[in-house]
Length: 148
Length: 135
Image 1: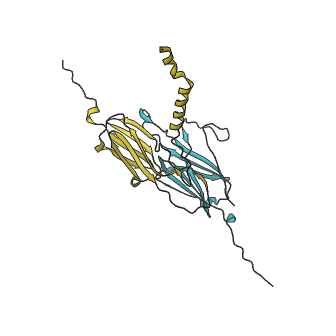
Image 2: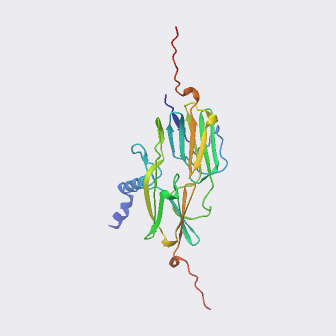
Image 3: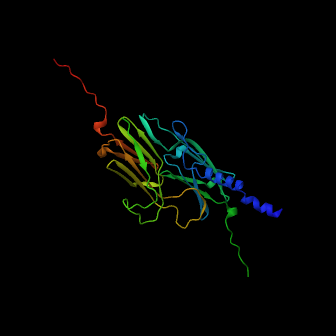
C-alpha cells in the first residue's frame, strides 16, 4: 500500500497536469488575440515583491498609464492592482502588429506578511508602479532583552 | 501599396556580424503596435523603466532599431518573495520595406511608452496627375 502511494507522483498523468498548469501560468506576458485590439491576459500585470526593511515593496510594469488609470488597494492582506489602458481611436490603413494590450485589467496577490492597509503608498514613474507596504507592528521582530 | 514590416528579434545568441556583448545582461523584446497611416508608419513600443534620455533609435538601410536602457532595479542583493518578471534593456529590430523619409522621423517617450512616427517618403505617396487636353 505504501509503495503504491509513493508511485502516484511518478505517474505520467500527474506530471502532465503539472506541466500544463505551468505552461498556462507562465504565459502571462503575452497578450491574447481578440478582435481588433488585444485584451490583457489573465495575469496582467506581472508583479515582483520583496522586503525592504520595515516594508514590503511590490512592483509592476504598467506602461502607458497614469495614476488616474490605476487603482491600488490592500484588503484582507491581499494587494489588488486594477486599471485600464484606453485605446486611442486612430485612422489606419493597416495594422501590421498588435501586441500591446488595451482595456481593463485586475490582479490580486496574497501578501506573505501582514501589512498596514492605511499606510500603503504607491508611486508611478515611467510606467513602473511601485507600492510600499509597511508591515504591521505585530510582524516586526522584537528585540528581547536578556536579563543577567 | 501596403508596407510590410518584419521584425528580427535580437535574441541572446552572440553574432559575429552584430558583435558580442561584453556585459552579461538580459535583454527583452518590447511589445509593439505597428500601424500604417496614409502618410506615415507609427511604431508604439512598451518600454517601462527606461528614462527618455536612455533611448537609442537608429534607422539605416531600411532597418529600424530601438534600444531602451533600463537601470537595474532593485538592489542587486534583494531577495524576492515573488518574482514574475525580469529586468533588462529593451531591444528590437525591424526591416522596413516602405520608403521612409529618415530625416523626418520623430520619437516621443512618455509613461514608459515610445512612439515613433516614420513619415513615408514623398515618392510613394499617391500623387494626382492632372491631365490637360490640348489641341
